[in-house]
Length: 533
Image (tube, helix red, strand yellow):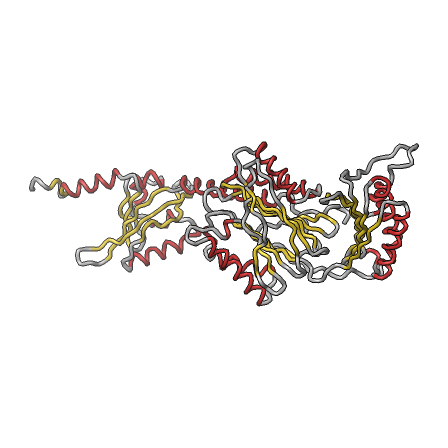
């Protein structure tokens, strides 16, 4: 026997056996029929069977009941000469535990090239799978938190307003961010619209977004015009949320008057799609973002033509590393133009915008928010009358409103409307400066009356002492009107109320065309001014 051979085994073969036995991976060899012919120490540790228990047994002792066909398929592939790398599956141990394993298999050939058996190298990945599942759960929780923040405070769509929204959270990092949008029923046929973006990503940005969205909604419902609202939000951001910068745009739309007031804090331009499908950006001054402080925010009043649609969005829709911003804005305008020219509704147009600007939306590097909002194509019937602050104006105002109620065939709500109108006019004559303007309007579902004066203090409903002659008017208004409120004007204030005309009709009201917000995205319509409406 030569020096290189010990008891019929070469030193090289002994070295290979030592390497295999010392491997941390479970190594076994099986015939193409599945009989185990080799079993190293790591296989014994992993599966729990000793070498004596495993050799000569069928590989099926390791296969869970539901995977018998899988093992047969692997043996057939090995018989064809295939190598199978990092195949993830499950195996059963001697004590009945089921492990997740990563296995690599390859065929073993004889000297003449015939496949005689197969080698299997397996590694336990149960802990890795558990960690991956926990990580996936945490990511899902973060995304749930982000969506919960974006859904916070939402309610039904605003009656008579068509809207379609899309919100795609960033798929990078934590998958959450600071984009938000909101549509708010301000009462008296007016609608408030917000879109904003907190700079940065992650839960911190999402939490700041939630705070700002709540503050903005409260200020809008309090009747602050856009410039004053932006000033208040800027103070809130600067003092309460230091080192935060926010871009946003807020507009008050009054479809009945065909106008809107808009204020932008460093945000991208709002696009207006006209009834003729032409698309143009609104001519709005771009003020500094919220959080900078010390700079006034300027608002503008612009026409809102009947049949118009507004497109509001955040930078995630148009700013990408591989494209020019101006070209993306041109593409957005062109997509809106062709979509509406083809007769697309808002939901279809929103889908087309995402497809055109974000063809690979599965890799969004930033949050994407899009809001398309359309207004009625038919103007409201309305009329105005100017009065002085003399007592006779109460009677004149009542006659004016009554005449139009008759012409609009709204006699069923006339008694209530005239009583509440009298209270508002009496309050204005007694406590405000003139001239007074009475405006009456109606839509398919409600009647509205507005009294505008030249005094800034807003009336407040209060309980009256039994001995007082005054103090009950606004409580009466609150009781009889379906909704009422006040809002500042450039020279004073407006006090308004609405009544639902549908209740007085013999039949149901004409249906409002509504388009639901996409279920896969954020649904952003705001609550009504008065829950009874």
